[in-house]
Length: 156
Image (tube, rainbow, N blue to C red; front, side, top):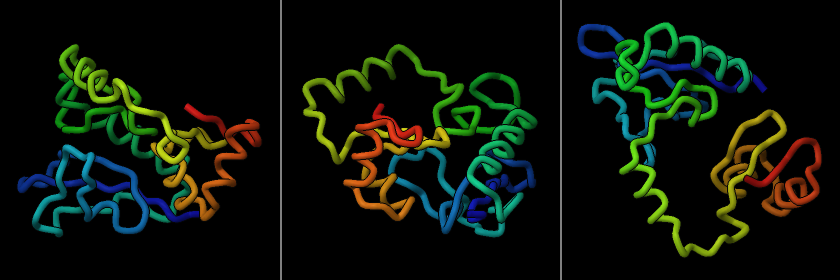
């Protein structure tokens, strides 16, 4: 399905400060786990490429992040915290951040509905319900595919 796009958030001088991959209204909405906010002026949200497969969108996102470079790696101007592609490649975590994550998950009971899964194309979904909703499947269908590693599905 060619439903994905790659977008950029632009500074007032027209230079990009963030490159992302999305579908539907992703470029215009701040998600709760995002550290980067969309610009208030929506004319500074630019769709770079559209009508892409997810793999194609990931590839263009990675290429654009590499082209402009990341501030946190001292390679460029983007505020992206990863190299793009799947959301965690190239992320730089400080020891303080690692400790905070460890403390946050310590003692949590792992349940089926919050278990992260990896799809056959390598896409990582933070929860079974996210994969099910995105792929228009039931939670049980995703859970089954992961439990038997059908078509490349797996739990993380």
